[in-house]
Amino acid sequence: MANPAPAYKRILLKLSGESLLGKLSYGIDFESARSVAREVKEVHGLGVQVAIMIGGGNIFRGKQGIDAGMDRAAADQMGLLATVINGIALQEALEQEGLFSRHVSAVEIKALAEPFIRRRVIRHLDKGRVVIFSAGIGSPYFTTDTAAALRALEIKAQVILKATKVDGVYSADPMLDKKARKYAEISYLDVIKKGLKVMDSTAISLCKDNSLPIVVFNLNKKGNIRKAVLGQQVGTWVRS
Image (cartoon, rainbow, N blue to C red; front, side, top):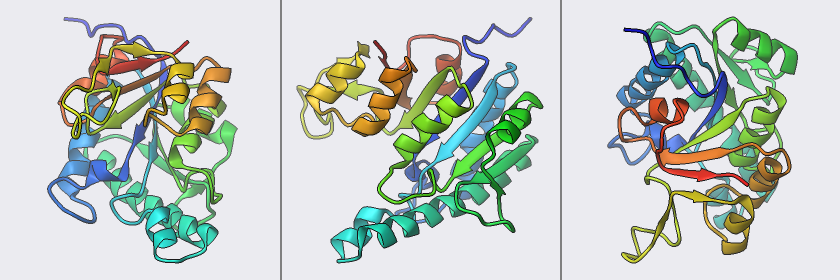
């Protein structure tokens, strides 16, 4: 039986560092990384080109340093390096699952990752390699959400798939407010106006200005990445 046709040729998957935590309170649970890799392998097998932007919150967040009295730029730089560690782990997980991959860092670390060169990245994708982006855009004050939006636009991805711990976008934190309402679809403007914690306002504005849709879904439910790639209703759609 033939595979169903995917709705997109090229996607950018935004993963938080917490997606690699598993049952740990800190660091990397490699089996969780392997689980993500298996999900990626499934959509890659549909002929979809996959780029991944990885966060670093399982190791270090810039906010931790700021709260401890560090300068914002220095704290953010530490957070960027945490994403590089996650990028190495994710690349290893992907390759153990039989996927060719390239780790691309916005901070130059020649021994560990390639530098970001847009045409080279697109070439990797065209050749069927999974591309992992780490270190955000390489600068402090910019989140990995903003980096995901920027890289998605640069590589001409057709959608951002934002994997989270919840099954979509809610009117309030569903963990704290039992009356929180889940949106099946919401506009970029409403996300900004309502102050919803989907992606930061810079990332949302970039997506809005370039009509780049975002799908927010629960990564912990097996098969959700595949459903999103097939254009099926999963999580919450953010678009015009």
